[in-house]
Every structure is written in C-alpha cells, then in structure tokens.
Image (cartoon, rainbow, N blue to C red; front, side, top):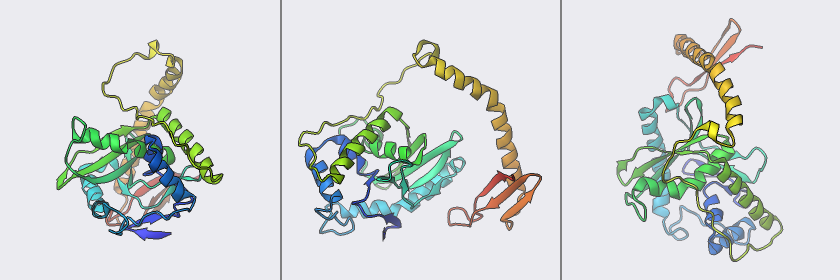
Amino acid sequence: MEQMGGHQLVDRTKYIGASEIKILMDGDADSIHNLWMIKTGKIIAPDLSNPDECDNWFQVRLGIFSEEFNLRVRQEQYPEMKIVPNQKPKQHPNLNYLIATPDAYGVFLNEDCVLDAKHTHPFNGNFENKEERIKHSYYWQMQMQMLVAIAPHSFLCPIYGNNLGPIIYIAANYFDQELILNKARDFWNLVKTNTAPPTNPKPILPSIPQEYRKIKFEETNFGNEVEAHAETWIANKSAVAIVKNADAAIKKMIPDDVNLAEGYGIKVTRTKPSKSRPHGTLSIKEIK
C-alpha cells in the first residue's frame, strides 16, 4: 500500500473502487476501456498528485487536503451524527474486488451512514442548482459506498469554492445497488478473462427522483411485508428509546480518566483519544 493525503491506496489492478463505479454506469466506451487497461495492468494508473499525469491535479489535491477540515466542521454542526473520519478501505462482504473508502462514518436515524467530503466549484452546470449537480455527479459513488459498508444512509459534504454548503442526503437504493453489482461482475469477468469490453456499452441513469409522492402501504404490492415489519417496529419502539436513554445516562457518569468499567452485567469501554474526540468514544456491551 502507499499513502496519499492520508488515504491508503491498494493496488488498483485488484479492485473496483467506489469512485470508479461511475465510469461503468455512465457507459462511455473510451473511459471503460481505459479502466479495463488499468485493471489488466496494460497501463499504469495516473498519479493524481503529479501535474504531468493529471490535468486537474490541483483540484484533486485541494479536495484531499480540505477533507479533514470539512469533516471537522460537520462534526461541530451535527454532533448527534457522531461523525468519525475514516481512511481504511472496506471490502464488499461477498465480492472482494469491490472496495470503498468513505471519508467518514456516522449515525442517522439510529442507523449507520457514510459521508464524503467534496470541494468543488459553485456553479450549477446543466442542473437547476449546485446541490442537484453534486448529487447527480456522485450518486453512483455513494450507492457503492453504502453497498459495501452495508449502510442505509449517505451524505455528501460540499464546500463550494470558499463557501460551506449544507450536507446532501442520498438514501440507499437497493435496486440501483443491484445494477452496480451486475455491472461490476460483468466488468470484472472481462478483466479476469483478459477480454476487451464491448464498444457500445449502455449507460444506466441514476434513479434520483425529481418529484416526490405519497403512497399508502395497503395499496402497494409489498404491503403485506411492510405490515409484518411495522408490527415489530411498533412493538419495540419504546424499548429502543428506553435502551438509548439508559445508554446515554450510563456514559454520562463515566469519569474521563476511566477506559474500562464493569459490573451489573455490562462493560463500558473507551476508545483511544483522537483530535476529533479528545476523550475517545464510550461503548456499552453486555457481559455474557
């Protein structure tokens, strides 16, 4: 592995990364063929920090170096999200050639989420606003990150020039994630068999809704499945709230200089301090 701006980069011939999946989904024949050449080792991937190999090397480097500050600001804006910066690549649980490295992990609606910091220009392009441009540009990347990290939520954290933009939410779309898996499997088979990609690939458009609507579960063809889950959700909602309140109350009583506390059937542990979390993070587990 090598280091670049704090991120670990693995051998690019061994995996498809989240930032590369857009190439396959967009369906540009030349870009797909170039990616195939890199994955088969026929050409070496350009060094993004080298001005002679990367046309937008300054923008790439600026995005990398502003990432830590961007995420630190988001931690201050949204402390309830418990944002934790990340530099470690994560493999898909079943397909080891799919790798994603979210810039951070967090919590949203009591579920896992992934976050990515972006430093970009403030213009709308062909979209109604810059937020839609950002969402469209990174939609496939964020779906891939959620797919690999098994997270139902994601957020883009943009800086537009020298202005901080609001975070942009993208929910997991399991239909689109299945399309990603199919594209990735087909492409990786071409890499492994050393077979050149087709010259007429079909682009797949992201299914980002432009207008939202209301539905009644009882009138859908998946209503029966929702009903079973809804009963479970309602029956356990109060228990989840009780556990959450007890969790917070216990952690509040742990002194800052204690990294392990046991008793009454539970164990509280503290992670090592970091720049973003000077007192570490407490977690509670049942003692079995």
